[in-house]
Image 1: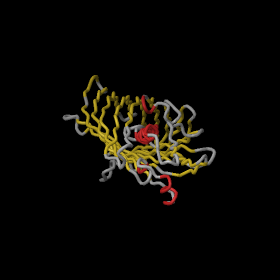
Image 2: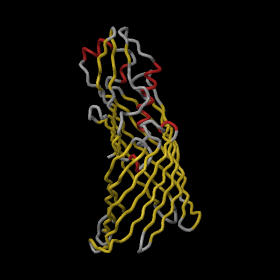
Image 3: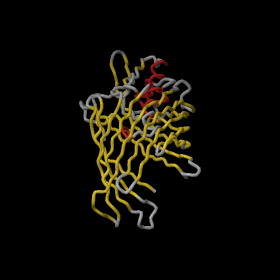
Image 4: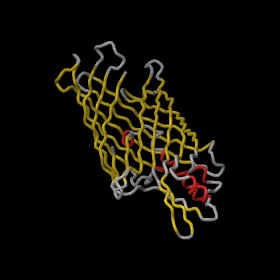
Length: 309
């Protein structure tokens, strides 16, 4: 779990509603874009941000929580179709300020995003164990606000555009692609995996509960992932128990760059892998890896669980 060492760095997310009940459309637009921008961290596979928690040190509460899980695999060597899928969730807790004659009333809100993305690719072997893999990606998601406020307060300051805050919903659709260079070398002594991936998905809102609040954002990043697995000399389940070494770096661009206070995240991991292939079960290998995550103004840890079939 990665913890930020300073307050969340996001575009303007403070809603100022005057007593006359008028809200600036440009401010609402920034809020919608910011909400969808959070989703960009969960629609593309990213081991460095797969479990990200950012806290406000002044209050100790969690301002932002990001989590995702998924996987991908090539179906067959003869017909090297690559499929991947990913499910992501985020929760952001901003506070909106309603102003009335110079006095402000702070409203706690909750923004929840849920996304599902998938990819279809094709493996092209370029040299020995090196594979070039173009991928087409699609994503669907939703942003929902579950406001916590007494009805009588909200009724006094309600505007035609504030329905997005009051149990509003903003659906999103994404289309993009990725290009991955993959190296795999497997032997009895060790397994080496190297992946370099560039991903881009454009997210656009549709079907909002408000006719004014719309949003868009781009998920764009470049990731490098390294992994080495080798026997420890011990056996478990009648198979060699392996240790796992990992390293990863993700560089963010466009909408994602600097959005959470950093331009890149790094990860170093150490873990173990249990081989259960001797037994008649559908899981052949299970990996448990502890990771140290770090970047600009950011450091923390995570624990990951992965399985192979």
